[in-house]
Structure formats: C-alpha cells, structure tokens
Image 1 (tube, helix red, strand yellow):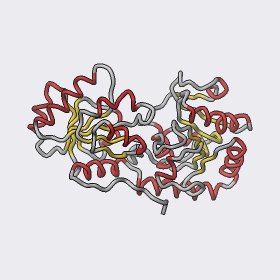
Image 2 (cartoon, rainbow, N blue to C red; image 1 turned 45 degrees about the vertical axis):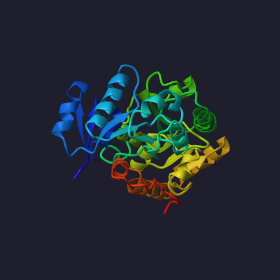
Image 3 (cartoon, rainbow, N blue to C red; image 1 turned 180 degrees about the horizontal axis):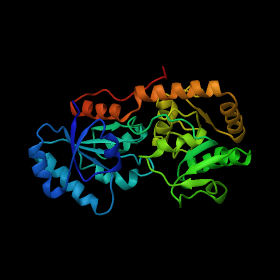
Image 4 (cartoon, rainbow, N blue to C red; image 1 turned 90 degrees about the vertical axis):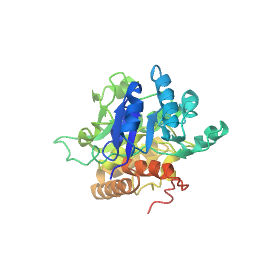
Length: 315
C-alpha cells in the first residue's frame, strides 16, 4: 500500500513522488478537514518555497503539529540555497536536505531530525527509448548558471566538445544563460517531466552539474539520464562517489578538456562499451536512486528509524 502524505499546494517534487505516494493536495483553508478526513496520512509534506507561499506553509506546519500529524520539509536547493530557506525548515518536525554536508548547519540551529535525501529518478517518467533516425553525437538537457561548477563544466567539458566538432542537441529554457556558442544548438525548452522524449536525440548525453567539491548533491539530471539508459559524460563532482557511482562503470566523469575529448571519442567509437556502461548505470539507479526509495526513507524516518542513507561502494 502506498504511503499517504498531505500537502498544502503542490510542488514539482510532489508530482515526481505521485507514482509511489498517495498525495492529498489541499489549501490551507481546508487543511484541518483534510487531516481529519485522512487519519491514515503519515505526514504533512512540504518543500522549500518563496513569496506568498511561506506564511501559509508555516501556518500549515503549526496546524499539523496541533493535530498530531508530523510535518516533513524537503529541499533540493542545498547547498546553494540553504541561507534563503533554513528559517522555513525550523518550523517542521523533520528536515531532508539534498546535501549531507549541510546537516550540521541545520543542527546548529537546533533542528535534530535532519537527514540526507538526494534527488532521484522516476521510472514512470524516465525510461529508455530508441534513437531518432539522425541523432546528434550528444544531447544536453540543462540550463546554465554562474555557479563555479557550472562554469568549470562549460569550460572543461561542453565548449571543448563543441569546438572538437561533435554535434549537440540542447534542450533548456530559451533564456537559459548559455553563451551563444552553446545556445546556437538549442532546439526547445524542457522540464523534469518530459526529458525522456529528448534523450533519443543524442547517441550519448552530456551533464552539467551545480556542485563540484565537498558536496553530496547532484542534479536530478544525473539520475534521469541514467534511468533513460544513456551513455553519460559529465564534469566531476564529489557527489558521484558519495552516491555509490563508479567512474567508467556507470558513467564517465572528467576534470579536464583533454579527458573530455578522450571520453567523448570512446563513448562514440566503442558502442559495445558505451551500451554496457549505460545498462550498468540504469540498473544501479533503479536499485538505489528512485523516488520510491526516497519515499521509503521518509517513511522510515517518520516511523522512528535511525539508519541514514549510505550507498557505499557501487556493487
């Protein structure tokens, strides 16, 4: 039986959980009725938010506590957004951060139930599909921001790939921040709900992550690409090993332009090796990194479980 969560307003991560969780969406005006009508709900579930949603979210957490319903707050913005959202988190019973390295900051503010919850894939949305008739060498689904890791990926991976003559299919916001040299490969906008239909446009996928060093946070694109069964080439991040991935087994990560060109040539010239890697990456994600796993972990914490996520070495 699926767990049941109540949420005040819907957020995009809530949509990604819906295949594995029964989510009861209500407004604050009807929250008390929703709690009373769903005594089997395990929590009030909320995500980091901004603007007018903040006061209602915090009032919702207070009402849930008064009604005896635990409240859960989840963010996928750490570490970059922790300064802007940590005050929200303090109002909830259980906090789940996308970066394990941010846990001490929450605990320093007095929040004891703080847990690492990485992003994930949703197999109902992210699945393999046949290549289009004339695919590009690489497909990239990403926006560009002036984070150091994004800039490094641009300079050491994406621009070298383009300048070496590899073809690219780019899907991002139309005003996604890419320089003209990259943006000229743009084909259309995308979201986390429709990405599977674009990955067949490339023989392999490129990745541009938001974090590089001293982090356990990586973009949801990492999990989506692998769940879609794509050979994957991405810029380095310390998160990959923390999440159990093995370089050269599940996908390839590089730190220099020379490594990027060598890996690109390998993935495109050795189709058998690329296919094995894509299969290994997909299987590992399906074993460890889906929203069903994340929902189960939230339920584990709600039930009083003390075990933390630990993916260890890839097996």
